[in-house]
Length: 251
Image (tube, rainbow, N blue to C red; front, side, top):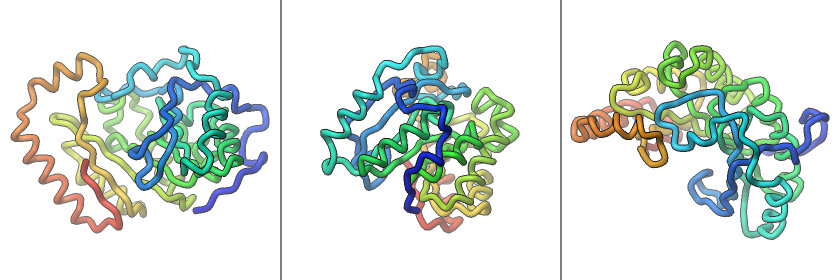
């Protein structure tokens, strides 16, 4: 999909300068496959996933640490050197300033990527006309979001966001992160089946990492049977791959 900027696509009252930014990575080759991207990490997330690698970004009360004007100055210096800007988090769609920020990025000639867990489907729908590619994290089956994400009501919102994303026709990757003993691991194949049946053609199965996570999760990980989990992750990979995606990766 080719997105176009325009004032009518974003709330007029919001301004890009209001975006709460927790961090900025000047160059990444990982956050949007196939693109050289700068990554803007947005502050705040309504969910509490045990395996979160950026738990310090959860608070909605923390002030931003990076000024939007500094982001724009970097991007002006990197024109023709970078392909894109990825808005990540936290949960980027929490903030009304996301759309205006995306519009300013597009005006500089960059493509726009988005990482989201789908917590705010209405705002996702508002900004998708400005998005060239999105990575959507599906955490679990809808009924298991209370365990997987600490937000029982989140399941309906995330799966609604999947519908919104697919209807918009935006290039995307749906992601599922699993670890031993989690409901998402127990139901990974069913989650993938539902995503595939909804119309997605791109799926990533992600093995949870302990880097950056809170101590409680790292302690939990010490009790995992690593050999048994490797075998289980391979089994899940094979079964999900067999569903017939245009693009599938296990990482």
